[in-house]
Image (cartoon, rainbow, N blue to C red; front, side, top):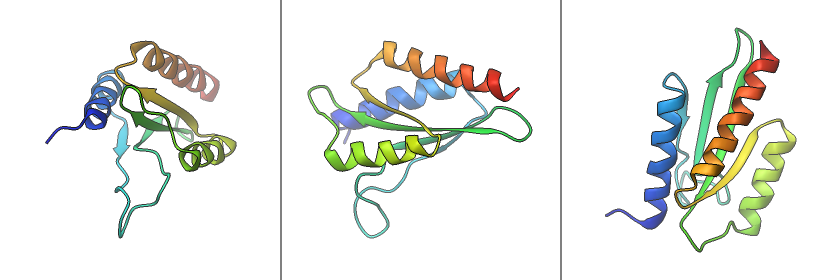
Length: 111
C-alpha cells in the first residue's frame, strides 16, 4: 500500500536518479529493531571528485506534515558534519532544484 509519505520518497528518488544516475542511495530502516528514530528517510552519496563524496540527507514529508524535533535535531547534527540536508514536503520541485543547485556548487568546489 502506498502512503502519502512513500509517494514523496518516490518523487525524491526519481528526481535524484534522473539527475545523478551513478549516485548511491541508502534508505535507512524505519523505527524498530534496526532503525533509528529521527534519522532521515534518504541518504545519497554522490562522487564529486577522486577524493570527495557529497552526502545528501533528505527527510520526506507528506503535505501538511512537519519534521519532528528529533528529526530536526538529527538533520542539524548531520549538517554540522558537512552533510547537505533538506526536508522535502510533497512534490516540491522548487526544493529539489535548490538541492541540485547546492550539490552542483559542492561538486564545483571539489573539482
